[in-house]
Every structure is written in C-alpha cells, then in structure tokens.
Image (cartoon, rainbow, N blue to C red; front, top):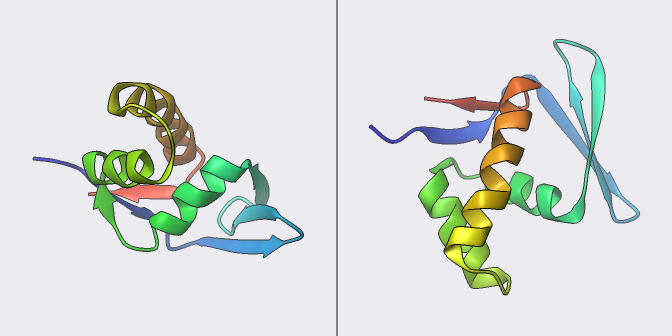
Amino acid sequence: MTEILRRADDVSAVTGDGETLLLNLSTGLWHGLDPIAARIWEMLAEPMDADGLVARLVAEYEVTPETCRAEIIPLLDRMRARGLLAGG
C-alpha cells in the first residue's frame, strides 16, 4: 500500500518575506524551509503519495523524475522525523 503524505496536525506555518517557517507545536521547535521545501509544504495542503508529489514537481520544475525522487525522499524523511509530516 502506498503511503499518503500529509501535513502533521500540530504544525503551524508562517510565511513572509519569501520565507516559510514551520512551528511544531508539540516540540516548540521552529524549522526553516528552503524554497523547494516550502513548495512541497504548499503542495501537501492536499494529501498525496510520493509519486504524486514527484509528478507535480517534475511538471513545475526542470528535473527528471529520478533526480526529483532522489532529492525529495530524504527531505520527506527528515520532515517526517521532525514531526512535520504524517503518513498513513
């Protein structure tokens, strides 16, 4: 079964001046996102699996599916480990 990625319920986002910061309300820790991670966060307003996320990023950026997947899977793993994403 494919894991559906979604934003964690206890995370609040603040965007301004070209920056996106996420606050994990459970830990009290802030996390700064680079522009690509911020775009992924925006896309995950609609839960989707990693394949759907890769397809959307490939359509938006000049990147191959293989390169995109290789770049975003570690990012998604880090976001999940920090409690920013939930799966299931």
